[in-house]
Length: 266
Image: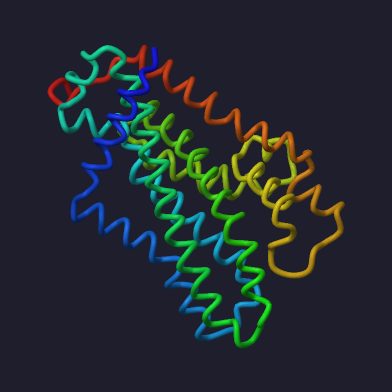
């Protein structure tokens, strides 16, 4: 059912197809936005709380990158009239889905890694004269947050790929509603529904690995358990490992059994 060579071929083709002026411009804008904002803020105020700033800006560009590159996984092929050719190949639909998922996850991670690297460099250069110990902090923060962003890229790439399979013509709109509503608004509600968001488990792992990184002093553990995370770290890691597998399995089932209308049939 799954062909690794075909999946890698689709991913390689997607990377080659992304070498256009428009996509390179989008890549540059997304990757340079966080360091540009960090540099701007550093000129007007001291970056005493640089961690939440970098993390929030990286989260924004991660979501925007996946909106551009993960959600149109089916519709872009329908619009370009390649769908009939791809689906006529053995395991073509599954290879298309997983190949585009892999390409979207890697592309968004490249954007995030460039953004994080430049933002950390800017913080180090502008704040070392005020806080000589900041370089040691950045040396500990940088690799940990880079790995967390890698996990986040493939978590959200899986969810957005499923949305693209289910709602191919309105995938970007539905994904935006999901990101703003479920991952941002509902995720801060201290209720059972928060545990079904990707952000909840990412934050749980981040706190366990990096400690307190939000603005202000660390509140009592009771408040952290109520508002942020109350699950053991191993549970959060297990859930993060299962989300892409489960979501991609659902997407594979849908794309194999659904009939899509091509441009000529609309």
